Image 1 (cartoon, rainbow, N blue to C red):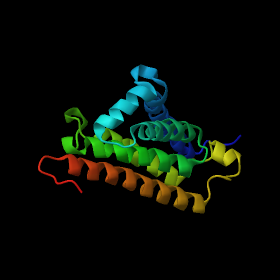
Image 2 (cartoon, helix red, strand yellow):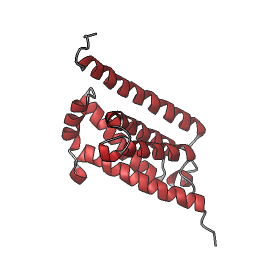
Image 3 (tube, rainbow, N blue to C red):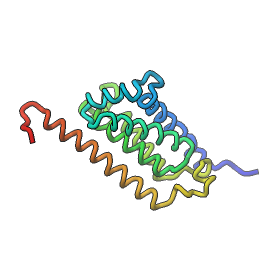
Image 4 (cartoon, rainbow, N blue to C red):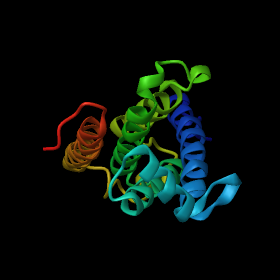
Length: 177
């Protein structure tokens, strides 16, 4: 009888929990589940938070969270899933950063934790108890890790940078560029 591997079992628990939380948050944004606003409500929120174009931002955030979360939970395309979820959380961190670190004050503690957990899983791999393992790791290759994280970092930097630039231009006393 095969013995359970504690490392792989730990990765399964971490993947399932982190993935479920991310999938729930993303389904709020995309489908309006769990008290969320759906795409329309999220679009309005994205516009109010300074993300443009707001509908594209709403869909991207929802897909990064829901899609990344589901893929993390089942352990499929784990590097891309972790990178997508971490990139989505980078946008959330940017929104919450002015309130400081701790969540009780509206800070970025919670989205940062989700982003770090997703990134760590994406980098570590899904482990034996995953669809990646069952498929021979066809979507979990070193080049996928590099490409996924570089792409996600570039996209997150562009989106967050565009938002920051727009907010700077809208600040009192700022001159139009």
